[in-house]
Image (cartoon, rainbow, N blue to C red; front, side):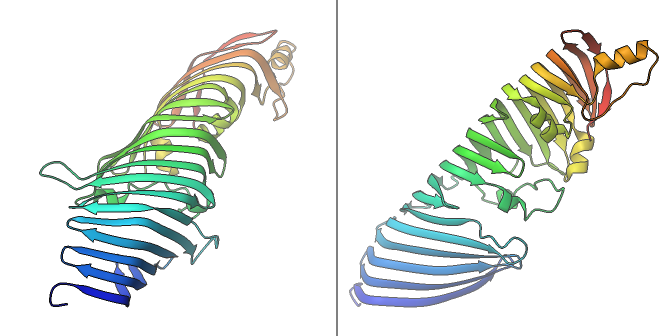
Length: 362
């Protein structure tokens, strides 16, 4: 090795570390190593590791060749697997991934491609990182394509009624600005399924924005923007235009109010600030515009109610009562969780009603 040349059939190492409240352990093996001045070639490198905290244990494996020449490092055909096991709570492992791809590095910049399966669903990811230069911050650009993602196993680990905290890693010195194109064919949460979701993701230490959010849900389509600002507590902003949707599940998900059914359009512009559901509800402000056709106002039959009042009889209301309508429109202003309905109109075969009502969004 005096001339800077070294060859070895194999090499092995054991690595352990304690970092960020986690225990890291790994074994590293390499085969057919050739070191030359200014270059390195390794036919096969295998890394088997784990990261363990009080709540989770993540196992990962990496299998790849390694080529180094000058300033360039290349992993030309890597295989990566991951498996996260919950040590408390739901025992189902998430995420589970099996991915193939490549990775290149030069002078602090890198780019990579991965393709395979995440939670047994097809995934394709491209990413490129450029380091900070002068006053220009580091940047991470990515393109993510997923066939299906189920959020339920990940949401179960969050405290009940808590809102998402602003990601700590985005606030660390040197954290990159992120721009990503995202497409998910099916996104499932405990109470909602979203199809054909496409959006851009913009993120830095101050704000996370989905400016071009488009998706199919509630049997219709929605488009608009969603953002989260790094205030204390975080501030959320939702702007959406929904077309030809089933309105009842939308109202139940946004306001826990399910007394209107029907199909039509909705314009939503809402802001809220809080660290939990109670805080978000108290600060919820904005506007909601509904234009519906062929639906029902559930809980009361207004035609029967008017006949009862004219006959001086008690008005019956129950969950089986309903007022069918041909058209229903409503404009609502929300301030600090209190909704003021303006110019609400209902047209049915027998009634034309104009209403102004104040209710509190629960």
